[in-house]
Image (tube, rainbow, N blue to C red; front, side):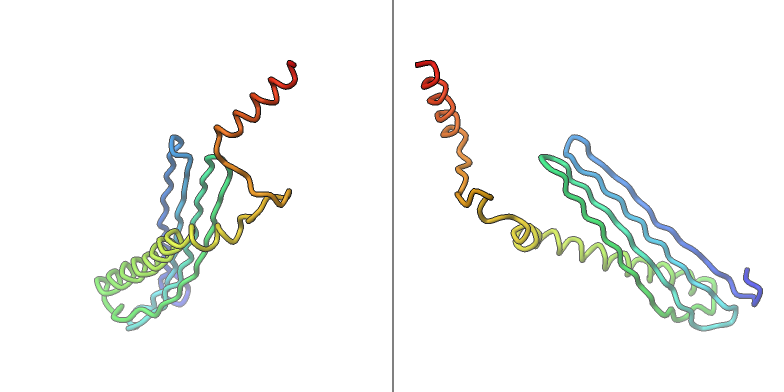
Length: 147
């Protein structure tokens, strides 16, 4: 309870998961705050959604994301109406971030990773990734040294 008779409510939603065998971990934390004045028909809810993903097989790729939300809640003049409005706002805010992340991952191979990757190595020559060819070159070099 606040001095003016209003009530401030904080809601925190968190989740963490990891898979060592698959080389990834992730976390989600959303914090929501609203202040309700008794008898008011509306109030505002503000939220901050933060998430982090880490993939570490053959490298170290991390993604951190933060998104702030603000929404006016209607029909909060009853306890049931207030509760339903808060849950709907949190579900919508968290859902928008979740959908945006899914879309990002669907585009990830096409856009951001290609932009980060060098077209040619520093030597300016294409690298042949066929392991058998490199093995033959190593064996030939070893045979030449013995002769």
